[in-house]
Image (cartoon, rainbow, N blue to C red):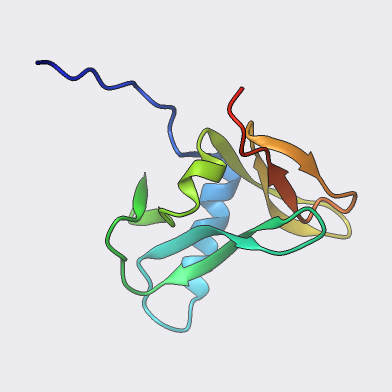
Length: 123
């Protein structure tokens, strides 16, 4: 019996601007770090919020996105189902500088853009 696996989209695409910001953050860290971890926390008016932290040591089952030049993004395995196929960008304006996520799984986003929700029902 042959089991056919489906190809899946990349967990997270990272723009050049986000890669440059990851490099900057890693260089400015007070401690040696392996990269940055992207996870999703239960928070905000729409239920979930992206969270980014330094990674001092990899955790088993993390999805690892190798950006080259020693830069890595670690995606929490519990966050994969919420962010698969997303794009992470870094945007700067006169009043704000932040990582942004373009997530095809989002079904709603709060007015301030800080939290999002994903409909748990398949299409």
